[in-house]
Image (cartoon, rainbow, N blue to C red; front, side, top):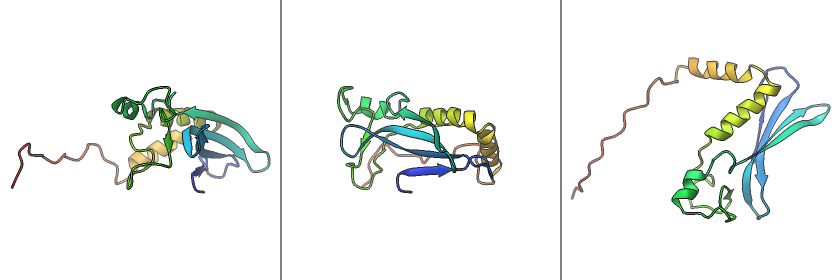
Length: 141
């Protein structure tokens, strides 16, 4: 559904997980994710806002670009971005993923373990990174 992710972490369970972007006070600018627990009869049961700043999502990008902490661009992304690049270019999502996993484990115990086990048992899973291409430091005519 557009910018929203829906999941059923436990097959057959009535609870669903919805993750979408949190808006800022600036138009078309997003400052984090919002994870919500949904029940088909009771609607939204619980929710948590996960800030990009709190989870270091754009820290490297902002430091590299010398973006001041007081700037509306610090720790956010907007729909205005470089052509051909995703709006979240430069995001490091490990902190957010860990926070979503922790939140999910409260409501869907064991779901992440089952997902991780299924993913690691997949025939396309890798135990090592592929070799990197060798780049020449000299120029060729």
